Structures are given as structure tokens and as C-alpha cells.
Image (cartoon, rainbow, N blue to C red):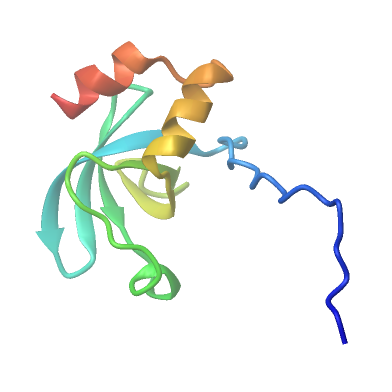
Length: 108
């Protein structure tokens, strides 16, 4: 049997944008034990935690752009909920969600 040919284009994965209560951050320092220090676009420095379901799925290193959800009861802490790849960061810049200059400043 021959395979059916389809004319479907490969779907472009939607880049997650920050929802209400979420903020884009850059990883400043790895602290160990699934904790990172991040600098967020709102100007605050937070202690980020990588949840258990994300530990093995995404490897975070210094300088990575991540999506974080600050805690309601401790605003200086947050959960890392997504790590952006370099192509996704470029797409966010094209869609004017974030400025390239700001990302470079935060990366240092």
C-alpha cells in the first residue's frame, strides 16, 4: 500500500505569550536544587522554582528567557512555567511582545 500524500502544511507551534499574572524573565543565576535567580521585565528580581513536571523536560541555563508566574502570597518568588527557545524569542520580538534591547540588557 502506498502512503497518502497530503498537502497540509506543518503547523507552526504557537508561542505562549504572558497571560495575566505571568511575566517574561531572564535567568541570571543557577542556584541548585531546581532554583534559579531571574530578572523579570517588570524590573523585579525573583527566586524562581522549576516545578517537578518540568525538571527533566526542559534544561534551563543562565541567560535563558523563561515565562514565570509570580506567587500571590510571596511576590519575590515565582514558578518557571515555560522556557523559550531562541527562535521563539525572535518571534516574540517580531510580534512586539518584548523588545530585543530589553532582553539584551537583562542578559547582561
